[in-house]
Length: 192
Image 1: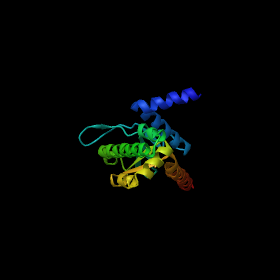
Image 2 (image 1 turned 60 degrees about the vertical axis):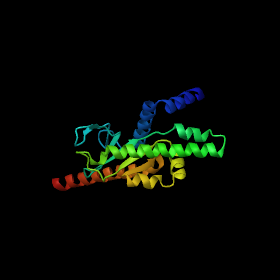
Image 3 (image 1 turned 180 degrees about the vertical axis):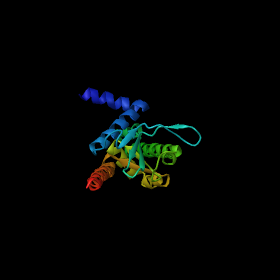
Image 4 (image 1 turned 90 degrees about the vertical axis):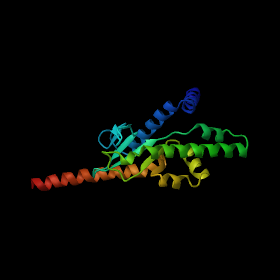
């Protein structure tokens, strides 16, 4: 089991596509843990075209009961975070954490450039949630890059981890439950 975990860790650090897929799996797991159903409450890899005709594939589009949407995209940054964990000196650790913050900032810039919230067919509040699946990596990035969260917000990208995303997802799940209850009550009233 330890050997398999080590193999997975090496693969996630070395293969960006594999790391991205793993992050998407973790994000979908969070969506499902909140009680949301695929193709009912959210879509995975929904295909959109921007005003220039370029194809955009956000990782997940969370549907809200009022026809609105929230885009959630998973970003995994492990290489520099791992270097920080294995650093022998404070200087090495600080340099690795600086690089980790730069990598997260680059992910923020990348997401902001895709303008998911402005895509035709997306009724978004104007921001994207950037999911970091490793809670400790999220915490270290925000702690070491004290302005990182605000930087993301100014770019309309809100950094979230599993712990900070779950209350949002549970709220959306409860909104769907209320909408379903209201629809059933209205149906009963219409019959009466």
